[in-house]
Length: 351
Image (cartoon, rainbow, N blue to C red; front, side, top):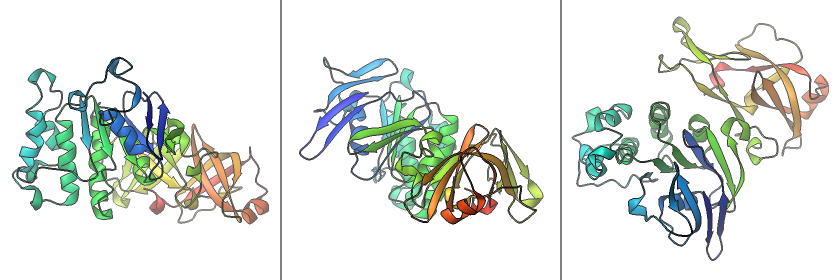
């Protein structure tokens, strides 16, 4: 897609190819153009110049512009914008009934199962919680059988409890559906759990793009600074220690022990590791309460905005960790790029 949209004090200029599967996060500060870009894809900005091709089909170029109502997209807003006079089932079927039978690739029974809506179908919208309303909004969008699902900060209006409730359903959609998703957010914890690919936006432009795991550990990008600096590790397999209420995420470079995963049948799992929770040592630590001790290589040491800290980028198999330590610790351990260290992180700190 390539867009050029000019406004009085803002200009969106992007030229990017987005993966045709998985979840692509549009990430950046408020006002950087994330929602505007999403609206361009949806056809809600008719004055935008450029081109857009989806699965080989042209939705916009110099010769024509497919209007919003003819674009096969599902759109989920911050507020669900459900129809209060309809039941949950009525809302779900609203778009489904307007799709020709031969174009229906998503069925109501599948959506209600994926989103855990079976017991809510007869309720009115005012009778369900905010998190449940967002699940209904997602289901309604999916039942239009879209070629692309657009999600504009769908969790922004929810409290932390409701977010925790809905995230597992989003993860399930990610795993079980093949519909590509463009997901707008400025919350790195959400993006880390859901996204495969990221477009990092600044002032209407794409500053960087690529696999999520690569971008969030790049030292030249702002994502590695601040308290939320983190890495995402994806396990090759998952096992469980039932009696100890622990799960084991098996990586190419070792094993992570984490609090018991709620879904025991998941074959893979991603885990977010905050840089502030990772300590390093020159030698394998003695047995302690910290279960996770992984042998890594330092690939880069960079300055941190805090004058007393520095950031280590560590290689673990084919993946990377970040560790924020004090400059004093670096000096005492005489750490340099290329050194082998042991990275330790508490299992209770992992999400």
